[in-house]
Every structure is written in C-alpha cells, then in structure tokens.
Amino acid sequence: MFDDWGWKSYKKVMKEAREPTPFKSAAQKRYKRLRRKNDIYTTKGGHRKPNTGSPFTGKMKRFGTDRLRFENLQEIIDDGIDFSSLEAKDELSTALWQDGQLKEEMLHRLSQLASDFMEYLKLDVDVQDVLLVGSMAGYNHSKHSDIDLHLVLDFSEISSDKDLLRKYFMLAKSKWNRSRSVMLSGHDVEIYVEDVDDERIPSATYSVKRDEWISQPSKEDLAIDYEGVTKKVNEKMSEVDELQSLYEDGEYKEAFLFGKDLRSKLRNFRQAGLDDEGEYSNENLAFKVLRRSGVLDRINEYVKNSYVEMRSGDELH
Image 1 (cartoon, helix red, strand yellow):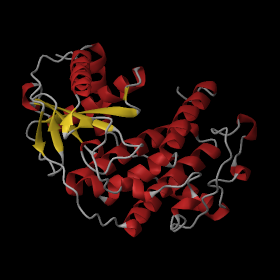
Image 2 (tube, one colour; image 1 turned 135 degrees about the horizontal axis):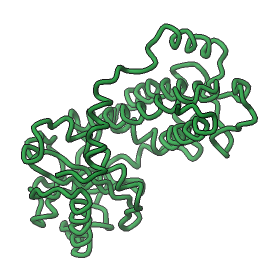
Image 3 (spheres, rainbow, N blue to C red; image 1 turned 30 degrees about the vertical axis):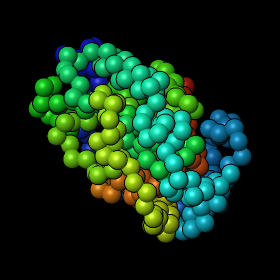
Image 4 (cartoon, rainbow, N blue to C red; image 1 turned 60 degrees about the vertical axis):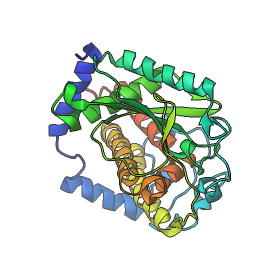
C-alpha cells in the first residue's frame, strides 16, 4: 500500500523506535556541566571553530544560564510576543468565514488540498472526514495562526500498529510541507492525519467534507496561565541551550541527532497539550511563543548546518 518512499520512511520509524535515547552517557553529562560552568551557550567565545562561523547571520541574543531568563518574554523576542493575539476576538476570521459559514472559495480550496495530500500518500482508503480545527475555526485567531486541516482515516484499514502509522504520517506531512508552500489568505495550511477512533477535545470543529459545523465556536473569558507558559518555555530552552553548545563545541554529529530528536519532542509536547486541554494549554501556547520568537527556526538552522559540517568533515561515516 505504501509507495517506495513511504515504505522506507515506515522502516526508518521502526528502526528509530528501537534506538536508545542519545546523550545520556556519563561523558555527555560531564560535558554539559562544563558548558554550563563556562557559560558558552550563546556567546561566540565558546565556539571552538570560529572559522566555520555561526549558523545565524543576524545578531545573536544572549540567553544566559538562569532558568528564569524567560520570566520576561521580551528578553528573547525582537518584536515582542503580544499575548493579546492569543485571546478571543469578537468575530471569526474574515479570511475564511462569512456569516458563520466557510466561504465557498475556501471550502473548495481546502477540499482540493485534502484530495492532493491523499493522492500524494497513495493510500487506497476512504477519507472519513476533513476537519477544520484550531484557532482559525474559533475566536482566538491572529495573523500568525495556521489553518489546521485534519484528515480523518480509519487506521485499522492500513495497519494494526497505530502509533507507527502516526509517525509515518508525520514524516509524510513534513516531506509534503518541504516540497511546497501552501498558504491561504496569508495563513499557512498545516495538514494532519488522525484516526477515526481518536478522542477529540471539545472545541470549534468544522466539517469541510460536509460543509457544516460539528462543534460551534464559543466566546469565553480566557484565563491564560502566563507564569505556566513561561515555565514551559524555559524548560524547552534548556534543551535548545544544549543543542547550541553541542554545535559550538564542534560536536556536529551529536548536534544533528539531538536537534532532530528535539524537533520531534517539541511536536509531541504541543500535541499532548492540545489533546489534554486544547488550544489554551500551556504546552500549545509555549510552542507558539517558541515559534513566533524564531526559536524553532534556530533549531532547524542548527540541524541543517550541523549536517553540512558533518558532510565536510566526513562524520557521516
């Protein structure tokens, strides 16, 4: 049922699932203590190979070593994160909606995107539903919001190993997104695949397939846990610090592997929050802070540049 790429990706996921978590050795822990002691997380002085340059062209902001460095989020964000952009608006987004219904043009384009993605997967299964969820289906939208499009499949028609299928679909989605830029009315479209038996947190949900609301959006007085969000961001930035120090120490292979693992962990971190508490979970809001502040882009740059350094130094062999 899988095409060649899909089958290779499927086997890759199986292999990774059996591999131990990296960077848990005594040596790695010792290196980490030394890096913290020397405070070279974000200073160029800690770069052992200055001729290789930094992975960023812009000026690097110093994070320091204190876990509370995000107590004021403005310290890491050039333009600032305005939490009001995460709060409820008076109306649904006019980019998608008119009089409470999905615009006809958007209905057609989202339906076509779902069809294109299924054709790309080359899976001979029926799509149970196509759902529009997330902030763009409710009142907490902003100019930064993605359009979250969920394709509902019956995983049991494909494989009995549903966890492995989720990883496969995540790989497929990532490859799909890399090969094209999909935007509607200035908003990125994020496609997800979910199982028909998945439990869904009650939230605004629109069926693109049936052109009707499954769960109507509602306006609520939101109580955002700013302190909790900040704590979550701090926790994740400790891992970003580790990635940066690995790169600056010239440990490119370890930085490459650690960066890939970190990206996966952040996706799971966000999804866990969405599954448990929905759009306003601390995990989802922390993820948005990291994304808007450019931290996710930095992780990608470290992964990419670590790979380049590995190739140049023949560290792949």
